[in-house]
Length: 444
Image 1 (cartoon, rainbow, N blue to C red):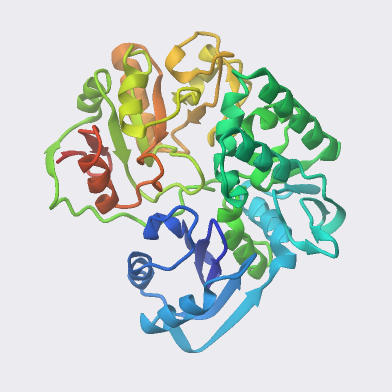
Image 2 (image 1 turned 45 degrees about the horizontal axis):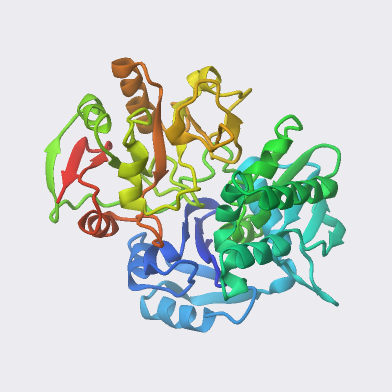
């Protein structure tokens, strides 16, 4: 059976399976280029059509008024549905359950799954915001306003008129807490509230609040598993896992799930290169890294990344000219997994940038004022090409890390394909991008 699940609320996503095997999971806004929009686009529909799959079943999930009717019309127009295709809907009351099913697919099963969201499924007196599942059954629900209050505080601090959209800026508030005493106190209170919800053992954690890496770092010693697709962009994946009876196992690859890119270089100038050639450029200026299936979630993790030598004194200024990032928001590093403990107080790995760690060897471009850094550890297993580039840089310069940020312009979605990349390079100071799968360095 061929199934497509579509989440048509904010942070919409699509997930496709064929005969029980996951084919693709992708964020809708990467294709319509409107952040958080779940409107279908021609680019996405053509990407689906190129898979040569017609669907037996379409499942929609949504929170509020949705665009699912428009989706149905276009799925038919692009001849993506079989004649007897069933179209079904999951409504709001299942929202936290789908978060939990996404987490089970990405990081595995636990006795308890904790979901903490800004908003969740409707209850008699509003929306539940904190839910604990035990063996797929709800054992706790509350409205402690943990996530919602963080959104309200974010709207207040950054003067955001539409509070319903302030959740997109919560990471900025978290970053600012390192500089502002009142915001730091608020952050600590939030961490206490999150901790009070947590059961004592055997926990998986998901929901939008699980993006708070400062709070997450309190759970390192407790070995709490955190879903890297914790936002609503993972909901369609949770729906798919439900339909596949919980058998979806993505633990070895929970984020590199997008469509395979096409390397049409007609718009670009290019030269053949090896990793060592790219490393020489990285010492002097930023280089994009574009390869394979796009990573899903909020962060560039080596398939759609912007890199530069973190020890270059001009590193932050050069990247800020491209990214236009606020002064108080730190950049993060990617580091060879086996070298992480030499530079950071880390016991284990951090492949998805879900925690912060104290630096042992201070490099100011990749840490906050409190000397902590949200790191990505890179291994051969989780990203071979990225690992090889980092390893080459280490062998050449005795530096096992690079400043790593997402490959996109400020206010834009992550680069999905080469058309997006061309636009980014045309309208920024980014001069080079490396395509390691075909060993090309491109420029415009």
